Image (cartoon, one colour):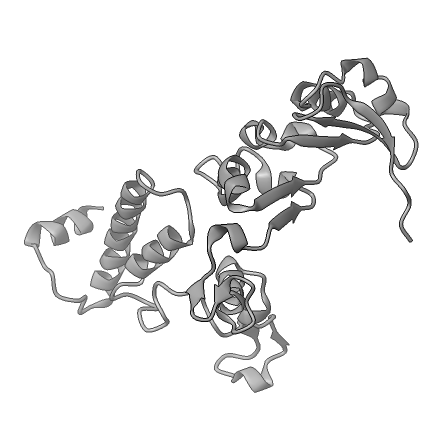
Length: 248
């Protein structure tokens, strides 16, 4: 630590000339990246932009500075003898473009939206809001995406649950663990279809978050058969028991 402070006191700004100075620069870059992330998190949720900005700072003038700082890796890692090319590797990981990364999905969506046959375009102009097709986003195993810890810094899905309806965008949440989903999102759902739940805590959470009072059906939530459900909605005065047809 003393060497780092001494280096800073000298006010050197040139790139590191020795191995020791390179080590010092790495420490300084860590500090700069942490400060930059702290400042960014005051204005933005934790997101790809912040991660890539910190990555760029970390690799500034140190080991790896020539390996696309501030960008996702575009070539796979591989395992093999020292210095071997990828063609002679014993193991090659999956290609980056085949991974379901957020940026890859965004790029695919951008291309689809800009395609000539896009339902959102009238020639080269965006259609009026009233003419845009309705969109319903379905999230299976919702707790893995919508749990409070994961979205504590903000979430596009929380924004959709609150404001999506005026843009023709709906959100469908599918889960057996109601208690693990963010309450802010649950409070914005207008329709709930509650099927059998074996866990007492989940039955209690389903009753508490339903748009109607389904407490009288709490016992049924434990013993209902396949296809049976309780429908509750903000636009209905009372909940309704329903039977869902089996689709083959």
